[in-house]
Length: 96
Image (cartoon, rainbow, N blue to C red; front, side, top):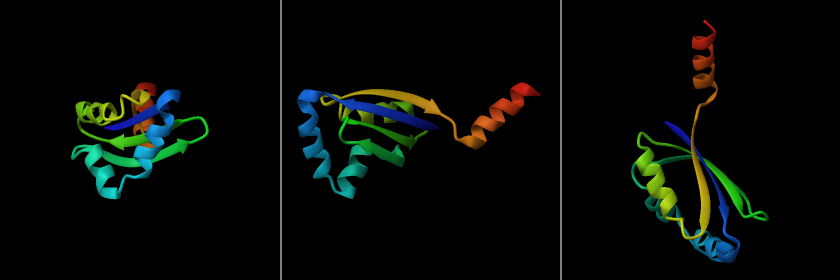
């Protein structure tokens, strides 16, 4: 399942979040995600303190577990999404 995670850093913890993220190695990032979440892509708007990631996981619990690692510093939304192929398949099925 593909999941889009969008976040906004709390203003009072923005610099702490930047400091924590900037010090992470690839290994730290993998450990933060956990074994059951694969990062597809992540984009940051540093000025606004917002961002969006698309991850893949068979477990929504695993995605929420990752998001909760950052809960003291962010407000987040977690939304299942489809790629073009999946969206076309659903629409074609419904349109007959």
